[in-house]
Image (cartoon, rainbow, N blue to C red):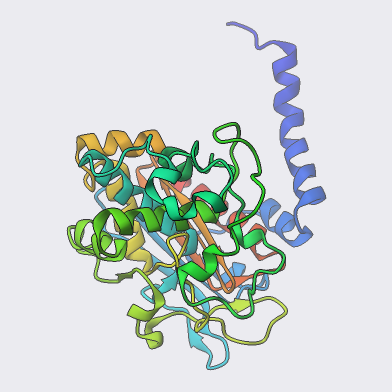
Length: 348
């Protein structure tokens, strides 16, 4: 039998210890304790336990291989009325919206209506003087967050308590700012990129990209519980959203713009995500283009809402998690919960 090198054996011992130490040093202690605690027997037990960690409500959707989807929920959809969390409720999916925008972009590139090498100055000349390096920033760089354009939500004056109601108002917080780096020299996540892509799609189509996404992505997949903007939604069907330290319900706060305006049910997001990953949403050419420009999973975060949408190929499973609490240490907690759910699925 071949012996394992001593260095490898030592690393196998100390690396888990380092990982645990990092959790306690950089993550909230509550999340660290949750991470170290024994796994429960079921996903539902994990969600019931999760509510103890300052979360209002949590929804989980699991769809494995050809099996029927599973739905889980704990806590409250509305904490004031004590309305229980509903796994079929609508939810602000925030930046998960970028997957739909990237898919629409791939389809239009495949149809030769857009070019990934086309520049921002060519597509939106009216903004060329307000964005540094506009003549060199390509559509590909915008999709991949390699443009160097300032992220509008990082503006210290961004009015989180009085959100703009039109994407053009959002865009003003990303314009006339110095570049973070030269085009394609680095990566930095920027919501401004996707506001600009939305404008490019609208201009190319001659109509709203919302309509295009509905007709070309949502309808073919039968997604009747997915909406482009909050104004399309009956607010009674939308989950309440809460921010730690703030007493109000954030469900009525507007979220517009291609960077993260969509609202959907967990099941609809799960159906979309599997189709995106297995190639049934896009044709072969579109899929190849998409794979060259963007990721196949995403997280989302806006005031009151956090979400995780991932496909796990090793167990052929889509897992969607929605939490209607943000702020404080909630994001770290939700990531730990998600990881524990994946461990439970691996144990099946």
